[in-house]
Amino acid sequence: MRATLLIADYADLANGKLGVIGGGITWFYAQSAVPLSVAALIDADSSDSGKDHPIRLRIVNVAGEAVGFTGDDGKPYRYEIDDIISWATRAAIENDLDYIWVGRWFGINLDPGIHRLELLANDEVIGVQTIQVRSREA
Image (cartoon, rainbow, N blue to C red; front, side, top):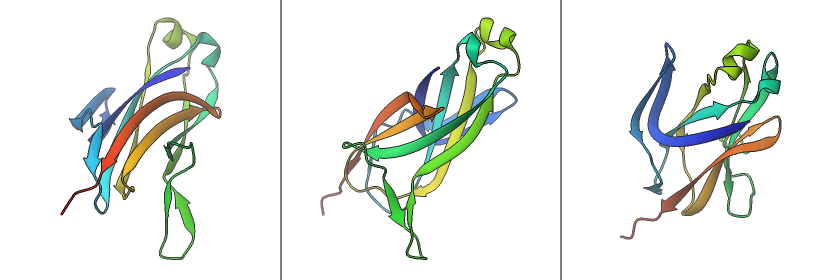
């Protein structure tokens, strides 16, 4: 399984169509609570059909450590989205029908620096996109 990731201000999937607003983001300025969507075009192998595949979208720093925040309750939380995907039939894969998936955060706040968005399927990285968070100089 392999995936191509696209970072956008907003992405949605409806009736088999991917709708994207502000797509192709490679950097943004650090500020409070930025909405961020990630669209993934997932290419599967025929052995992937008929099974559920747990996927996880996560943000990590350059050292590969999970990035997150501390909640109002004082507990640490990571920027991660978990989901399950599946291809109903082997024919869908053999006819090169890719799977489109969208994950959204309605407000993330990242420190300046380089970060990686990673999509994992069955705990294996299948897609990566790098994003730079820049600080605003006063």
